[in-house]
Amino acid sequence: MTTTLLKFEFQIKSEIMKYLISTLFIGMLFLQSCKMCDCGSKSEIFDDLGINIISKSEWNALPVDELKMGKHEISLITIHHSGVEYDGKKSSKEKALGLQKFSINDKKWPDVPYHYMIDLDGNVLEGRNENFAGETNTTYNPSGHLLIEVMGNYEVQKLNNKQFNTLVKMCVYGCLKYNIQPDVIKGHKDYAETLCPGKDIYENYLVTNKIKNAVKEILENN
Ligand SMILES: [Zn+2]
Image (cartoon, rainbow, N blue to C red):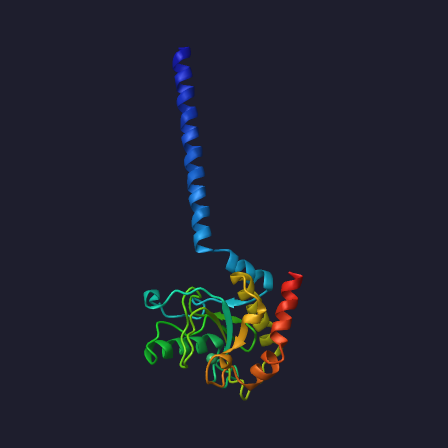
């Protein structure tokens, strides 16, 4: 009788052990996969900085074929404008979808050319997966660049405060995520023959180091 009970107890104990070991194993696998996809850290930085992201699904982005894109490692941050005057009458979600359709249908690119797009209210619309290099109509090679676009034409428009604050935060994001220095923040114009990112952004925010200094200040206080 006692032997049967002992046997039974032993069986239960080994079942519990098996359960604990398998739970631990699954937990380790989960942690490992999180580390591999780097999930969490990106949205954590966005949350910490108070960046409002409009995801691709929120702007009804079309599905894209990432096999057609080239992987890259980001070491530079480059600012662009869309080059098309924007008054906000059309929602930024519609604008993003319009750019994506133009990129896919007319340019034959697999997705929008930029990784992030900033609207007039300082929201950030998620663009191309930043693990893949963007696109350009000009002669520089965008591989290695985190491409941040400001919606509008800053040859004729002025960057507003909300946009400036978000642009700075997005550059801080790039510096933190990729462990790079604010000195790598430049405009498209610094790499190619173009008006991009427009006179106002280039002359009043990049040449004057206004963006870089604001980024440095946030990084130092982080
Ligand atoms: Zn550009």
